[in-house]
Length: 238
Image (cartoon, rainbow, N blue to C red; front, top):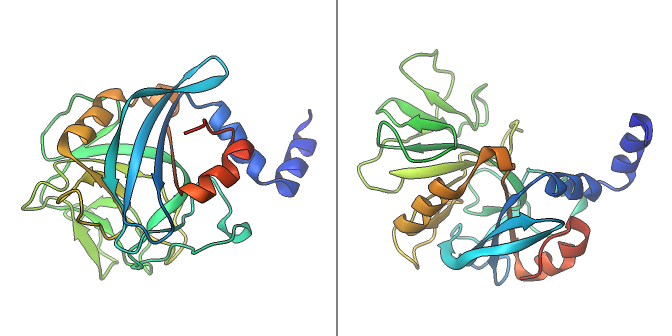
């Protein structure tokens, strides 16, 4: 198939890009909630064996945004999908398919194959849509500040003691949502402002398991939408 035909097919059938992305992934995390407004979910890891994904170890609980989920900007054009769309400050976790970025934490090093960022007191995540650094982790001590709003990543609690960037809205579109992570929860019934949070032992397992050479992906959806898109995206049965 020549490149012109590939581009034409992706324009006509944008979901094909997702299938292709999944075809090149050997690790998959699936997070499912009951519905769009549910702030709790279940996460299951999968590993590829031949042409199919098989469950890896047991599922574990997670908490989502306080207002559930909305379609995020990941490996999918949200303009062609029905349902709520995530925006800055809406309290929703992103739904869709996403790559995973750097791991981060309070310790100077970590047992992980992911790139790792030590969170010093000057590391911030910029959530000002007007900033040229919107949706980026930056060291505020080493660069010119053009933002009016950001989140200090080195907290007094343990929420970011270990975390992983979810590549929602990367590269960033203004006001489409920012600073979305896997991180440690406050508790099994306490929702987030848009991240996906879990028990400390579960984020530690992700640190140890995830391998960037396996092109890991996150699929995060309400259960009805998962079943709706499962065959097109070549997702495993639950």
